[in-house]
Amino acid sequence: MKKLKGLDALADLHQAMGGERAALPTEQEGAVPAVGPVLLYVSRDKKARKGKEVTLVEGFDADQHAEVAVETARSLKAHCGVGGGWKNGAILLQGDHRDRVAQWLRNKGYTVKHKGG
Image (cartoon, rainbow, N blue to C red; front, side):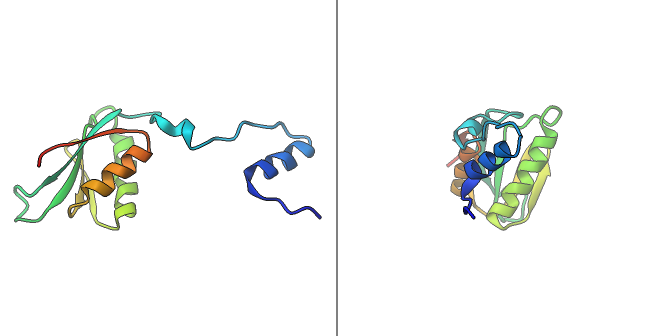
């Protein structure tokens, strides 16, 4: 019996069993986010937080992109291993994770600009 490796082999098996061969998604196709803003701002903030740092991701419109922002916040929290949430049109992450968050967002197809110092 032939050993299958990767999605191409699975697609070949599906086609051999009478199914249609569908185009496989690639990492390059996800270059632009399907829904949501294209430009996001990443910054660090300590104001009105008793001196504790948070990483802010701004650029989501609270009315149009709320679902995308909540899902992105959930994924970023898991990626960084920290708490946080979605509040007043911005994603908040506990701690200073600007570089890590910016790189993750770029990999998801967003254009990211650092804001502040």
